[in-house]
Image 1 (cartoon, rainbow, N blue to C red):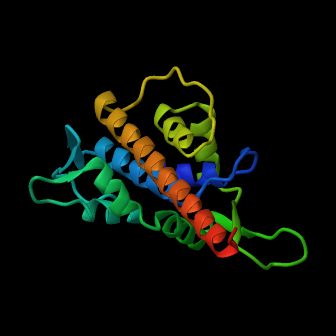
Image 2: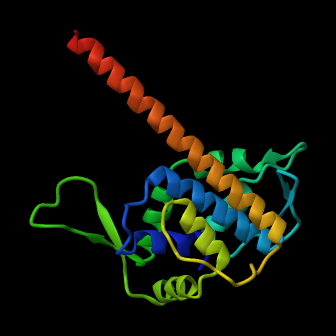
Length: 201
């Protein structure tokens, strides 16, 4: 399983204090893909730029799509630009893929099935693998989960890939999620002001 799939499974698991937003998760999933591509040599990071490598296509289909989406012309793409471009609706893509693969099942609350469709991880080897990484507090998984508001507790294990590159990607994920939250807050304020205008004095 990829880090992105493991992150999605952890995010869908029960017991989190706050639900994970789809936009936040999509950005973190794009970051997880990029870290996996770094780990396998499909890309490198030069400053804040994503530089394509020469490795063969990944076996994982979604990682293969991510690798194919890397811009291969100079000056190459910034990490945060990659997150926004690749992250668009990415959580929905992962949900659909994992449902098709039998890793997620629909979850129904109560007698009615109205409203947004909810899913939960199925008890599979992939789920056990994701939970195992989570319980070992693998630094990259914990850092990305923390970015979307899932508290995994401290990690004292050194990352299994280049510290500087991983740190740059995780920092960009945090920045992008903060920017997304700022947009949400601005829209809330604008909508509130518009509603007050219609109400009148």
